[in-house]
Image (cartoon, rainbow, N blue to C red; front, side, top):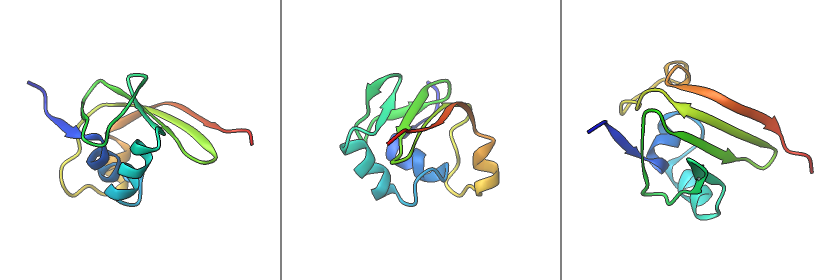
Length: 91
């Protein structure tokens, strides 16, 4: 089986949220989707899956290319996913 990681841990390791708790809160609020479905914080994500995050002012979607290791720099984290969508949200 492919390596998988909880979505709340993944978002923090990819430097897309400031903390795992922030990622958990976003999941609980319905702002995180995995393959178009609302994600629970404990949902496992593996390479090849698409994740969408609704930030307050932008919609960001990416395809996970590689599951990040425990300590990942912001620069190397950026190389572990491919941006699918990155658009501002009109208020």
